[in-house]
Image (cartoon, rainbow, N blue to C red; front, side, top):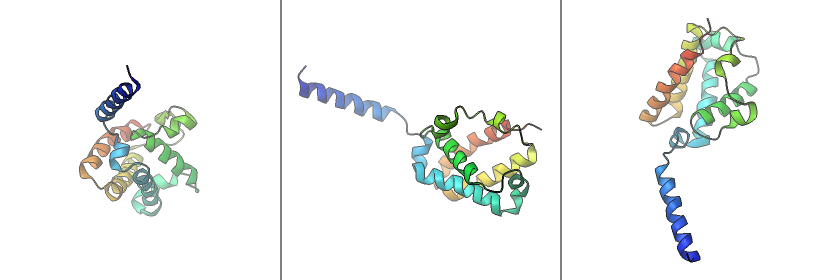
Length: 145
């Protein structure tokens, strides 16, 4: 096969595979910029809204490390680069949270903060719903009391 024909063939194969791969939620919501805004807004709400006081109380005073880890986790969870796993390994979310009491109150406050953050950060309603519908069972899985 001539080099030009080979290059044409490779180009067609690459275009076909690029078209057949569905975009991730991470890409569809706006990638790093939107994911960062979502995660930062989540913790801003948790810090400022009295409706999340008990949830805030189980976190350390300085949230900078927690914010960063959450961003890394959510980036991978949404289908972006697996930043959290690259640094820390498998998230094992439930096991990593066993040191704190995760009950219905904690879950409802976490979902409250996430609902507001999603509403304010992800502009597309349908994408928000997909994310929300997948986060609710994840949050409920965390219950350990």
